[in-house]
Length: 324
Ligand code: PEP
Ligand code: MG
Image (cartoon, rainbow, N blue to C red; front, side, top):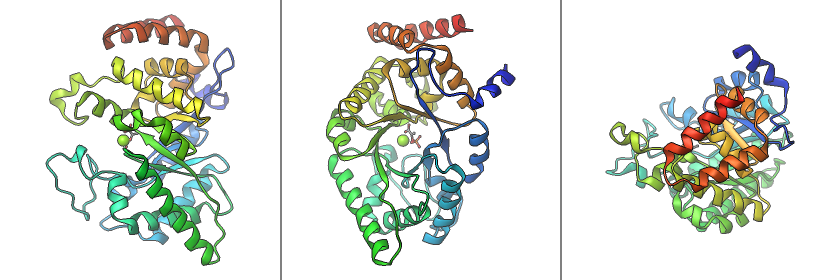
């Protein structure tokens, strides 16, 4: 079975009725590059840049970041690499940057931290823009967006970094810019956000956590955490439909994208891109190649009638069994 999955490497992530999904890899450290390429990733859909920051004992300099990003962008060029700007706070801490709060998931996290520390943001963006020189395969992704002002402020800072480099005589390309949709407020403003960026990326790990008020790292409430919860599905559908109306591609990059059951529903919704860990990539591609979008839409419509996650899960497992 694993051998069969390996043969999938060269085949496109296309349904039998011709719906093509781009299948990207989630990456944390440069060590993830080889397994992702070996699994047939069409690019990087989520580079969690906080990971290389977390394994150090101080902030990496612009030069150190440049070297890392260059290596990654080069390894995947000409395929796209979505570099998410530093997303610390919540459950991710830097040993050299203290954040102590009673409710870290509701606190100083993601975009909030880097907008309060523009020097961290500017250094990272400068390094990333320089690293893409001549390759032009860089997208920047903004984490934990909860208002349009944050997107505007971050875009202004990217422009500042871009102009600084221009003034220094370094020719860089303007990057694609995307917003993570992972906070309920962003779901309700998804059209306004979509108008301000080039693409949307659904962070289902946080979106499910915040929609259901279930701490994603708390074992005691883990039983309540379910990405097939009808509220989570309704939110994702709303995001995908908004992206379609605004002609902006929608990616799903949370762990949910790597679960074959959920893949079926995301196919039915018509997501443009899925980004998953290298280990999950072959089976997700198998699902895409074995379910027509028509069938996925039928299963999605049935799922959307349900009021609880359990029957949705049962139905999807049965469909997977029937497909072999
Ligand atoms: C998410 O929230 O779904 C996501 C992809 O980001 P992270 O897991 O790094 O918060
Ligand atoms: Mg997240």
